[in-house]
Amino acid sequence: MTVAVETGTWQLDATASTVGVRHKTMWGLVTVKGTFTEVGGSGEVRPDGSAVGTLTFDAASLDTGNAKRDTHLRSDHFFDADHHPEITFAAHSAELREGDQVHVVGRLTVRGISRPLSLTARLRDADATGLTLDTEFSVDREQFGMAWNQLGLIRGRTTVTATLRFGRAAA
Image 1 (cartoon, rainbow, N blue to C red):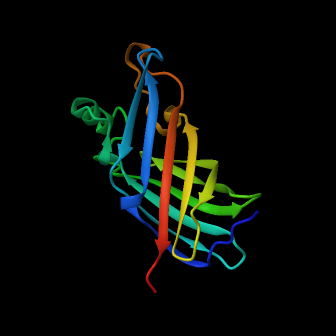
Image 2 (image 1 turned 45 degrees about the vertical axis):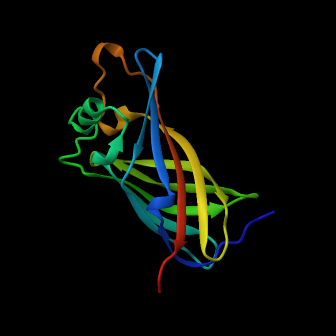
């Protein structure tokens, strides 16, 4: 069964959306988790059913529950939030595929470095007033200039999880 989504402009509901990261540290023994507390975005569903849009995350809003670690993550070793305050994902195309699967192609920009990113999201709770997308994907932080790795403590890819709730934008 394919779900139809209303055409028009949609606005991210930041209060009903979450964007989190998790990464293994301490040689893979500990998983650090965090959530971006300030997110925004909008999108447009076109008459042909395809969609485009942009999401933004305040790099300094990442909260891992440890103030010292969060300060380090904001530093030039990682997000360099003073010079690159926003992380953006620009979706150039999003197409509903079989069932509730959405194929998304776009560009992720972190620390001023943009890389192509394709992912699959799951559409749920779609109706005339709102829709929710869930996704999980991984990125190589070194591709975005975040190569700091004291004593080899941090290895592997970072997993990003998101639940994004969009509502109809006011006309």
